[in-house]
Image 1 (cartoon, rainbow, N blue to C red):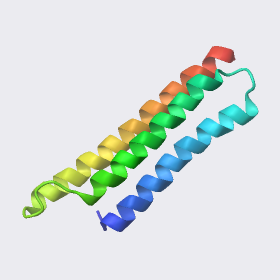
Image 2 (cartoon, rainbow, N blue to C red):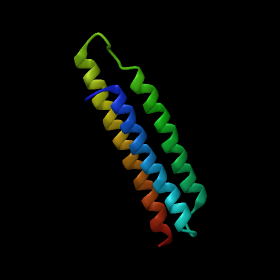
Image 3 (cartoon, rainbow, N blue to C red):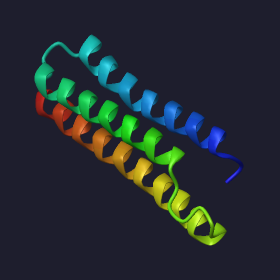
Amino acid sequence: MASVKELKKDIDLIMSLALSDCFYVLEYNEKVDEKAVMKIAGDIIKEHRELRVLSNHPDGKDNPKLVKQFYKELITSMLGAVDSALEKLSVEVKKVV
């Protein structure tokens, strides 16, 4: 990991891409359940906030190994959250196709 600053930028980028997919679906698919897609978007925003807060407060600041493990878990959590949100979005789109 290069720096916390770069991690925050990555969190912002990945979460905003997932969020833009939600808005893309709302814009170009009139038949999709708007409330369900907006709930997915809300979950993405909530997760984004939590990840940004966590990125500023690593566990075990005195032990570099614990800090490295913390950030690896944070990245895994971020990717899992985005994957889960996109899977839910995919299910909503498949319902109307």
